[in-house]
Each structure stands twice: as structure tokens, then as C-alpha cells.
Image 1 (cartoon, rainbow, N blue to C red):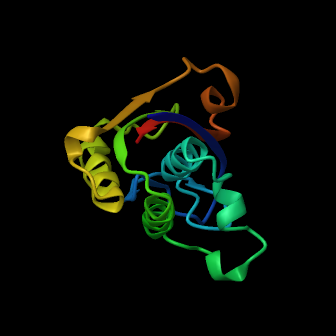
Image 2 (image 1 turned 90 degrees about the horizontal axis):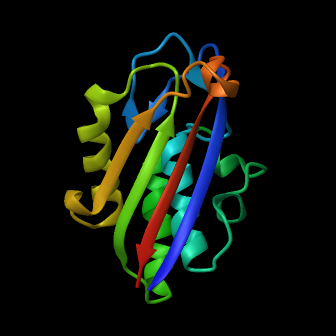
Amino acid sequence: MRIGHGYDVHRFAENRKCVIGGVDVPSDMGLLGHSDADVLLHAIADALLGAAAMGDIGHLFPDTDDAYKNADSLVLLSRVVEAISEKGFRIINIDSTVIAQAPKLAPYITKMRENIAKACGCGVDCVSVKATTEEKLGFTGAMQGIAAHAVCLIE
């Protein structure tokens, strides 16, 4: 068994979608990034890659490569799962937390879990997604961006 931890952060930007967990969440501001800037899926990908000692998402999908410009992070996550599977690993569970003052994510968490489970080839009961605020503290509380943490167990 191996444990992995992932962390990602993206700043808010105008004229961008706010994609979290593969869900286009209605918001006045989107997230800035080379791909679709899905902060949650990036944290999960990093957790999985870290557990398998395979680097991070930026190593696998560099932001200097135009092939990943505006890429769908669900596709990238599926590729991460393929890569760790090729090394003989399988996912036991994923636990994640999105830290955002806004938008409110509770209505979208079920769909996020379903998207992640599908991309990872595991049951929804193996995927946890939680959302919290920082009570208006820090950069997330000041509405400058969104952060996410993820922990996974693979074998």
C-alpha cells in the first residue's frame, strides 16, 4: 500500500470557466491555467502520481506544451490512472477537499464524485469530495483563487 498527497491552487480570472471536479460550476469568475485549470482534478492527479513515485502532473503534462492548452482535466486524470496502472498500481480510495470562499460547491459534489470515479475506473464509494471555506482568511477567503488537497491510497 502507498499513500499520496496532492495540492493545487489556481487564481481566479475573468472570461474563464470555473471547472471543478469535471463540473462547469456557475461562477462570475473562472480559474486561470494552461489546461481547464481544474484545481481538484490536478490535486488528485498529483496524489496518485506521488503515491506511485512518478512525479507530478506538470512533469507528465507540462504547461509549456501546447497539446495541453485548455485540456480537459478529466482526460488528463484518466491518463494518470493509465500510467500508474502500467506500473501495476490500482486505486483503493481518494479523499479530497476543495477550499473556496465561493462559489458554493455542495450542489455539485455528487457529480464531481461520479466524474472522478469514472475517470479513475473505481466505484463512487471510493471517492470523497469535500468543500470548505477559510472563513474569509487567506487568498481563498479573499476570493483570489481556489485550492484543493487530495490524499489517495493505492496498492
